[in-house]
Image (cartoon, rainbow, N blue to C red; front, side, top):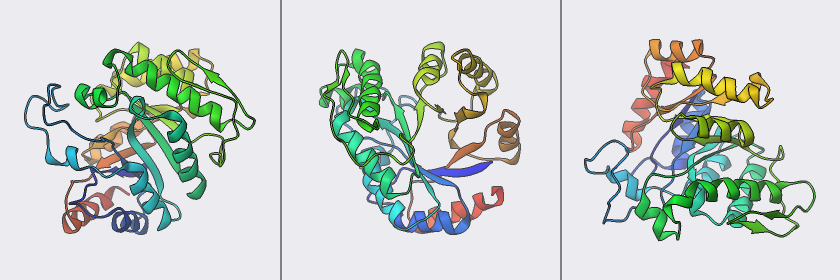
Length: 276
């Protein structure tokens, strides 16, 4: 099993350069970074972990693409991922260029994790009507694929469109590996099967029931069973938990690192090294 990591990198934590070097030198497989452009103080949307105060790091996140570019520059093997990019909040033409550039410069090491978001106020500040965020994300991904196509390709959707264009560089393998985040369910699994490479669930609750359902939808869509990627994220590991994931056919997990300074994060890496 590939042992990757995820962390809320901020202006107060270990730096991307230091973390990336330590991850690669210790043999960890990858690094996934979450995204929030900002967190409005007037927060009406409940936090993902409940109604308590939102942890400090949510409002201090580094831009994941800038941080991953730094990580790419000081490593050779470490895979780089977003976990997750809030696609509806981006201009997909601009984002397609940023993704392709990072994938090109890193030698094809990028995984694009995408999600719909949970913070209504944040999305509204980006001009996103909450009821349209899923459609905006789906169309944004389809538009980016058009820009990554080998030949100029137009895309016309309800919300997003682009003319046939010259758009270089291209991602190394035509597109980065794309994982869709979100809660288990028929609509999410259908979208994964039709337009992604796998699922990026937060935590491991319910995977025993959900993964067979996802595999059934995947295979019904004519996809290769061996090509499905499920990467549970924010995992706090135990030997039994990781063994259970392996029994489910999961080939990679992203272990949660603390949003702390260098010493705290390195202690966590020392503890997690026993799972490598």
